[in-house]
Length: 558
Ligand code: GLY
Image 1 (cartoon, rainbow, N blue to C red):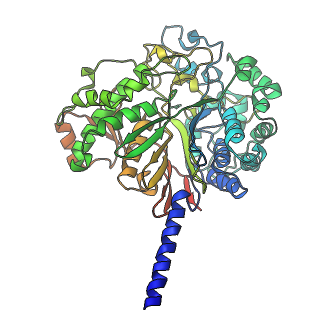
Image 2: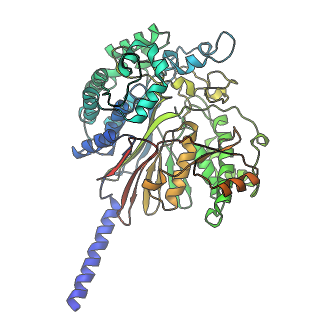
Image 3: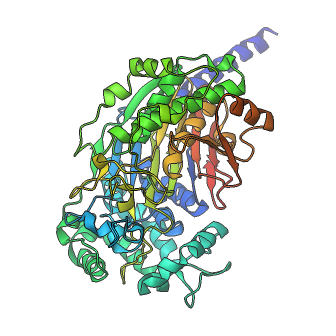
């Protein structure tokens, strides 16, 4: 008996030693992305001795190949990193920039109305890509492997091809008219001028060659030399304003992420040129003053919507490219400021948005992708990347094999006139030569005493409220596999309505919210494609969740 007790004590001690070790580093790696081929690319690179940052390069590049409707080498992204060794947290800003020769007259039609075609389709809508420089930077400064290894899976998939899923085919059909305008776009994405059907194999040997150039020569392979000349010539031939100087001068920016605390959790998130982190901080600072756990769902939703309404009002009034405009970030993120906002919230009544001071808000596009990675060393990556709208500008320069973004539409191109989403512009976010458009991308880390989460999603201006709802669910104990699928609701100040996915509210909850003065609009439309991973330091449990809204998403722990 004594021996058994001794054995039990020894085993208990061993168990605690194991738990203590597990607390320092995750037992396995976790990757969640919008496509199983991209998630596999990440694990392939980890198996070769790469770290989370090499895996991020592999996943980001593979997504560029397999999900070109959402992001790509012709686009840009924001990559939030946490390096376990020294705790360094950084946001790699690989956002696209406005061409130096930008002329806002291009975006106004002869009748004085906004020229939405120029803003969203073809070469005038394309900003200078940041994605290639972002990948090169991440590999060089944070990775362990050469680019030739981390880009290898993407190069292989681009050359061999793969069978696109239903979402890819449906979204391609939606952009067919614009893609058909440009011969190289049509040759890449259409079959005999038509949107391809299920069973079609998509290949891009030209893109494989572009990725090989980047693998061999880094930034010079894309931003200088032969490819730069091909890109500039191709854009200018179709009426765009790119120059060789635009490409040669493109720079990744390393920015300090924003960080704040909420109910004992530390949130690390995107800084400007994203509006996401500031809006998240405002909303969570407001909510931090309530004991949400003691409230019924209707009152929780009411207060959350009121916090969303106020944060979205501020978000675009004050924000733009930090290299070009000053911003009252400390004020917007301060708990005292949140206390002032909270004081204006009636506990039982909606505040009509028109009673808040007006602002002119730009809106962001809806097609983007997010991946989350955690490796066994505890390195974290939250990467959100985009070409803006579906298949970006729809324009492929002959010989390159990838679509250019239409990120110019994330600028307020015609101040005072609505953009594609019926929203108005603010000249803080007007394009200046070389400036970056305001974004909603909100890659985030949620760090608690025991648990660590990595989270993000596409979804235009809804990104912020989706990430908010994911963070709140994670803090309340839900795991990524479940919270990525939760039905969502959203309020963005204007229009003054709570939009909700089917199932977000019961009929009784809708009635109760309406009685408080809210308008609720439920629709069949589903939003976002959240990919999140987590680790419980205490139990060692790891999770990877990919949004069931996407056909091809893949969250894997191994
Ligand atoms: N283009 C989407 C965003 O940056 O928010």
